[in-house]
Figure (spheres, rainbow, N blue to C red):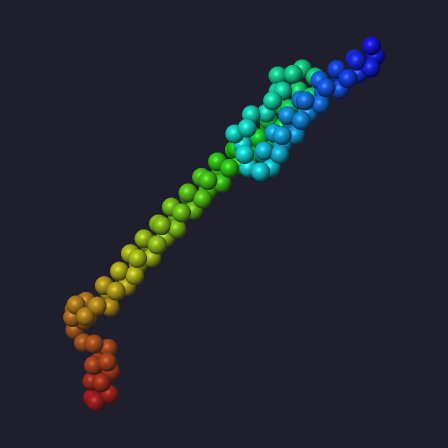
Length: 117
């Protein structure tokens, strides 16, 4: 009778612990969709399951934050490329031959005139 009770108790602990271990393994391999079993239990095993569930939820939140950060970084890099292109267009426009026509005398001509004067 005592032996039977011991086996029943051992089995009632072993299965939930195996489920918790499986959930922990899934979390460590990046499988966050696997539900943690036993979170509704009112005993110590249930407390362990709820703790593992917190780890799973935090991992999901971290993954989401990293994805948002990656998206923001890509947008910022795109904006920086656009800004660099606009800056280069302004530089190119300021040194183009059309824009040089509004100068009354080019810097080399004024130096030449002053040297010959």
